[in-house]
Length: 295
Image 1: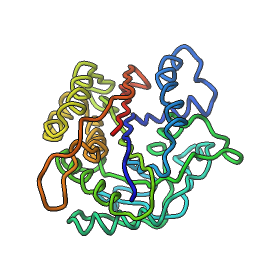
Image 2: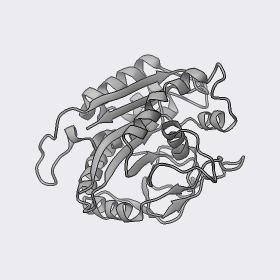
Image 3: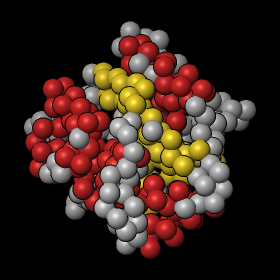
Image 4: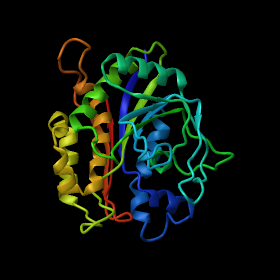
């Protein structure tokens, strides 16, 4: 059967992608941030998955405020990097895994989660920046990502957005779906976005280092409690865009220690191992958080 062996968490700041694309990674401003991912790139080589299930939010490229689903799963064979107004990022096409994606969609919907099925969409910096950070820079024509990717878009842009608890429970459902897939696959699940930042209004530029790190501690050690963090706490403490952190709870809910059987409300396996943790401020008025957990 397929299995989820690790979860990865990272911010997806668009300026990080621009720094990579424009050759600025060794400039004084950016160098400490990229150094924090040196371990992660080697870890990816040493722990190469067969598939990445990547949770992110679309930034008005595949969807718009005219129509934005709460949860949307990509089931295409490949995904084109999106033009976000200044041309697509110079990165390779993103290969999909239609068979596993379709299976997860079927299973999760039968577990009473309503998903939107997307057979064609472009993917923006929310998905490509995490891939670049974890896999290194790739030439758009001759390079390639290490494995297929299943995009999973979450609405954290237009209120109402899903609760942390709902996202956490969805992660548990995704784990059950993956484990019911017959093919022997090593799957990683990634949660992206955050951490504290606000892009507009009187509090534009807000960063809350203390709250971010306390939230990371809770995500690792008390994920169920972390999932109960109310929306107003994210907005008050982490800024209007801090709500993106609910996407990390999908990945955390898919880990073995909080897995729950389809019928029995029982605890799962041992606590995950923290393979790597990193925090950096600022990156284009955003706090960057990064975590790797292994089952």
